[in-house]
Length: 434
Ligand code: NDP
Picture 1 (cartoon, rainbow, N blue to C red):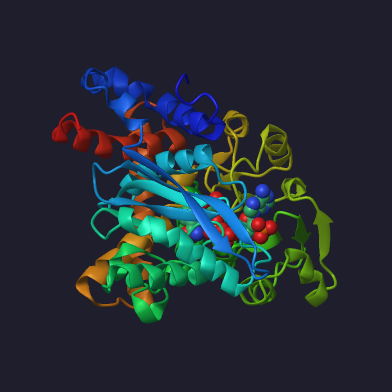
Picture 2 (cartoon, rainbow, N blue to C red):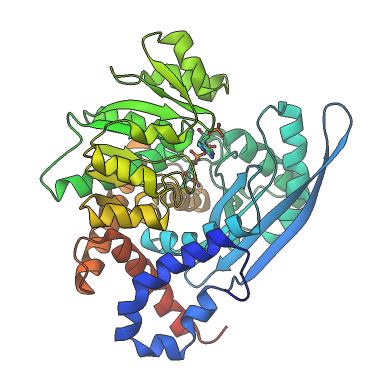
């Protein structure tokens, strides 16, 4: 706390993880002696840089860029880039810290990293976004590489941005090195299934949670927040499994469609027009729109899948979900539930799927993209989807097993933290004090 006193998100993430790890440290005093916790919470490297660019009116704009290389014990740093005005050192740091355990949980050899900038792509022209991405990469390129650090997308960084970033990386390096970034287009080293991976993976994970109670998505009412990459593909898979998704949101407000959201319309608005979720009413006049995104949690549902951003479900929203009879909350976004909200779920028997386990499908698929790039070949959509499903089932099983082993049966949050931590801890122990 002394060193990171002003980094609220980071301190919360550390608190959540370390609380879960108490039984592990009780059983393994050698971890304490090796200073594992002190080493884990200190990033290996943190880079902060100026990103100057020229807007369409000819004005010079300056943003701040970040890359945090948190932990490389089990593989190259891996984690997304976020472009959003709210990005700051604390947010990048909490995301990077979470990423260590998430990546470990996938069972694949990837370390933890994260990055981004306080740039807002909303309302910017393609040319402005390109100039920003090029300026961002003009610094980032010297810190990344397929064996050292492999960034990907996150909020505000999708296929368009990854394309501009990769194009400029290639120009600067003078080499075709597709394994340096993931989330690329299919024509230049991307993987089939990456677009769908986080949303689909979230639903596969949640399906395992339901299965353990002899239940399924069939006939369930689902509320999903956000309407970006994760939310759209979580909606698609939940619908394929027989659920009815009745609400989606963006940072301005939410739509409610009691007949079930028409996903083609949402894709048209969000993926093609890059518009606002409010425009759904132009296509489906029977739906309703409410200003303010938090109200989405007042809608009665069996399953809630927060897929927008951190801190979007607070204690009050959690209590409303419980009162409305919600049985499962599973996190597509990173840290969408506050610590107080998680406590409400746990105290009231709501099955809780923690982000670092439930949304690990995206990074898992990114690691599959790295493998394909290294082998210079492409798997089919079905092959990637099958691997993704297996990975999500394994993450669920390992989390469940670790929770039971340390006396907290059914607590997937503890299980995921413990299972993710153990692999990294053992690798750090083996590699000495570095
Ligand atoms: P997108 O940029 O595609 O979409 C984000 C969505 O969340 C948009 O609908 C956005 O609305 C909304 N949103 C952002 N901020 C807020 C807010 N303060 N209140 C309400 N809604 C908000 O991002 P992704 O779908 O990729 O990411 C969503 C979450 O999932 C993030 O937490 C991300 O870290 C996490 N994640 C993403 C992965 C991926 O593969 N994409 C992998 C693992 C985790 P608006 O357009 O108004 O900003």
